[in-house]
Length: 123
Image (cartoon, rainbow, N blue to C red; front, top):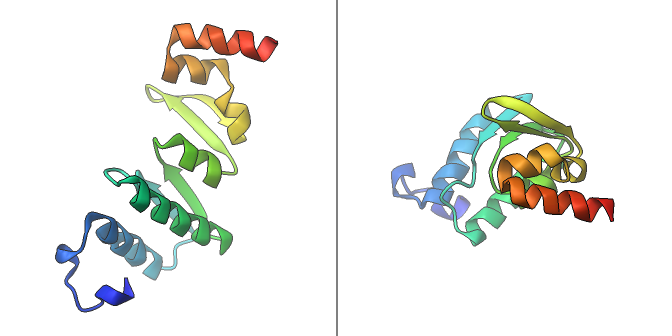
């Protein structure tokens, strides 16, 4: 954001306004940073930049609660994943474990794909 230091926040791109929001939250020196869909509406390049920023904050030791539908980002950033469906927790654990959970597959991919995934994991 330094190259845009003299620009008012309202004139920034959507992705840079999100960065400003995170910077404002970080100025309070939180012990826990809550991020709700930080990449919503972003293109792949902007998403990659936000993912790098979140990874950097995590590497600095900040605890982050990330709510995100971009699963590849979730899997790359998260130590532990909780999956919810209709307001109820259906799975919790390491990303790879949760990704293969039949309840998660059923909830997010549908019944037909769930059976296929179960057959593949049995093979």
